[in-house]
Image (cartoon, rainbow, N blue to C red; front, side, top):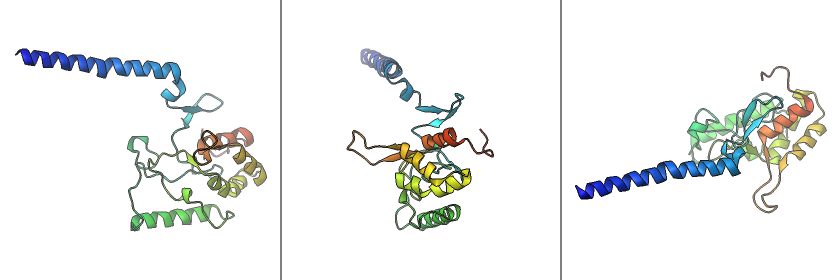
Amino acid sequence: MKTIAIALRATAVTLILTGVLYPLAMTGVAQALFSESANGSLVKDNTGKVRGSSLLGQAFTHPAYFHGRPSAAGSGYDAAASSGSNLGPTSAKLRDRVKADVARLRRDNPDAPADIPADLVTTSASGLDPHISPAAAAWQIARVARARNVAADRVRALVGETIDGHTLALLGEQTVNVLFLNQALDARFGAPHDVAH
C-alpha cells in the first residue's frame, strides 16, 4: 500500500506540474510576448472582419484573385486534416490530378506563358501552405488584370510590392503570401462586385 500511495502522489504531482502549471505558464508567456502569433496570426480586413490566417492557405477561385497551391488537406485547405497526398511519382491518381489542374489552369489563364510554375500544380506537405513563388504570382497576372479591368503593369507592380524576401537576407526562397496579395488587390483596385464579403 505504501508503494501505491507513493506512485499516486508522484502521478498527481507530475500531472499538476506538466498538465496544468506548465501549459498555463507557456500560454501566459506566449500571450505576453507573442500575442498575435499565439492567437493564430489572424488577418483582418479594413472593417475588422477576420479574413483568414497568414499561416494558412485558403481556396481562392474567383478569376479576379490570385490562386494558391492545390491542397490535399481533407477536402482542401482543411486545417483539421493537414497532410500531403502521399502520392508518389508513379501514382496514376497523382498524374490524373496534375493533368486536370494543368488543363484548368490553361483554360482559366489563356494569356499566361506556356510553362506553368510547379507550385501551381503541386501540393505542399501540409496542404495548408499560404505562399506561392513570385513566378506563380506573375504567371496569373494577365487573368487577374483582365478580370479587374486593370492594366497588367499595375497588377505586376503590386505583386512586386508583396514579395517576401529571403529570411535573414540569406535563407529560403522569395515567396508571396496569397491572402496578403489578394487583400492588397482589393485595397488598391476595390473588391469585385460579384464577390460576397
